[in-house]
Length: 183
Image (cartoon, rainbow, N blue to C red):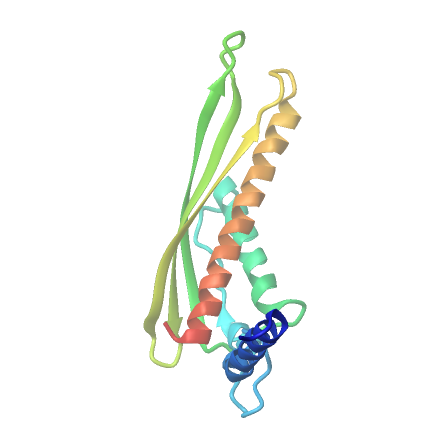
């Protein structure tokens, strides 16, 4: 009969052997490639982000700029983009709904702001769509008292900015997945 120490050592040896066998299978997503192929960072820097088509001086135009700027920072970081290989066209619509209404004033005290976005990645060389997708964001925010107009306006703007950041995160994750896995 084997002792308890021997059994534990055998189990640890089996785990170490399995870990050694699978160690070469893992590759970090943003790692530099040693075979000369471009890494994910270089591929993301080749994505062109045209301005989002919204009416000038509208709230949605400001949100479109916020989405585009957040996504550009996620794709390019502090660097500027490389010569474009792909173009990302983004369209979105926004919504706003009251969650709770004060019985005393009849004004909303809590609201939801939402963005529904569609995006299309187009390969510039062939002008063909290589990936399409949709994403959404819903954020809630509290509306302070009825006499605090600036605070109400600021709460709404902060909700727009948070939703725009979430849309940019979702699109960036999808683009990274596409350029890593090819699907």
